[in-house]
Length: 252
Image (cartoon, rainbow, N blue to C red):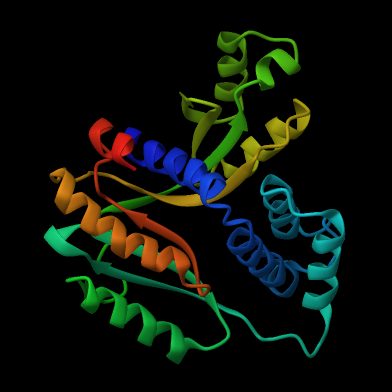
């Protein structure tokens, strides 16, 4: 799991450095829209999915008025009909790549995804072809200063998280990354609420069961494809099984 967490941390830093706030906002607005349509209305108290989307919006510092505007727009009967879909494929050197998308035009999205895989020396696969490589986990990102803020040391903090269903807790620079099973995602949400903690991000993510190590130059080619997908507004999340070596993290 360490390779994945390094990638998550690298993405977090890179987003700040590159100033990709507008991209983050676009993705969160889509999360909110789907949550309103699929999760049961505009009241976050009765819509757990919307509650999570709002928390993630706050995690990327989206202003309150923007969040409220996104909720109201999603509730409009004339709002775009967004659909969630996934795509799986292989990049160069057999690196597995799994995409989660939210789109109002499936034909456009699949065409863009297929073109990108081909352009960068990969190939779009069939649905389910990568199920054996990834497992769905709850992943929560919490600021490193939280234990001090709530008056506990890191050991006690970790024990509290384990009590809430954490399978693994890693400290990566400025954050704690908390992993739970798919089934314990909601349990951890409740535990953090009880502790008075608002995570910077909380998601169900696809974690690679095994990773593949490549040389630096080959890895950088993979990242060109990954970054291409990250720039696509229809793509919400990109997962891969490239091992994030210290050398690669430093280079990035």
